[in-house]
View 1 (cartoon, rainbow, N blue to C red):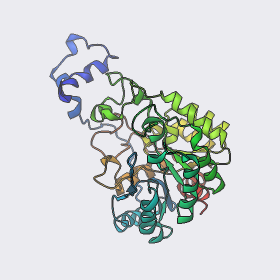
View 2 (tube, rainbow, N blue to C red; view 1 turned 180 degrees about the vertical axis):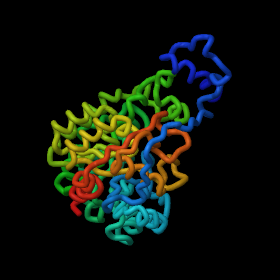
View 3 (spheres, helix red, strand yellow; view 1 turned 45 degrees about the vertical axis):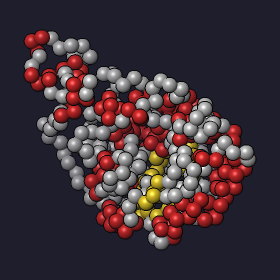
View 4 (cartoon, helix red, strand yellow; view 1 turned 90 degrees about the vertical axis):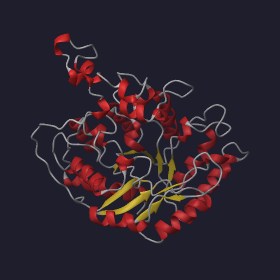
Length: 387
């Protein structure tokens, strides 16, 4: 069954709460494949064009480079030139981009040389754990020492991908999955705290990624297009198990700052609020999650007000042509983020994409006051990074 066939008639069923529509309401319109459905809103709502951030911005979550994940070696891939990125940055009032996936070893040195050293104050580079060596004897000490070397070379923080918890296995790619709170990583967490290097950690994904890909899944289109993003079945831990393991790490290392990316990988602001109340060393970024925040604008604004000192701006942006085309560096991408944070506009797109990439909804601005906006745009990230 191809994608067009399996999406036929989905709109008619959805309109009646998942049940088949009464016969008299059926029409040829119900045969329109959902993949071809691109409705134009008839709502007449105020539109604000925010061309530049109100305050100079630190984008805490970008991917200028990508290094190896579970493969040995330390080659680094530059997704774009710094010069191309600087043009976007200057237009959109972006003071600094943080390249989270700066790599390890010689790859990290190259990232730092071409970005942070060549363009001081405009680029910051994070290192990553050396995943391909986790099953070697003495790894715990090696990884802690490697963080020391990365810091000396100029790395400002550590990015922990969802590799840990969802992909890394005892024999790198085979055997049982390695748990997030595995004690072999404790020296790394402690070293990061001692060196004031924040941990940017991504441990889970939206709840829908852990559910069956069926007609009840609000991210059906996204998961149908990317079935490898699904963690339903097999031996993957649940979303709750991943979150609880990360919380145990945060609790064990209170002197280390953990910036939990994508609003702590959760759409549930009640849960995230409880976690952040409990753990003062837990922060969040908003990268690739304004689609979630913007459909609960009142709750989102209260969340920003409550944790205004521990929220940082991020986009998860990659250069054009990379894995996520809806998140490439562009004027439009940043303007949507600015509109969400700075205005009270209603019912607008959360991504520069013809079809919403995460789900078929639109968002509302939260109109943050200047005092909170400046913290989210730059002051909080500057404090976390020691700038």
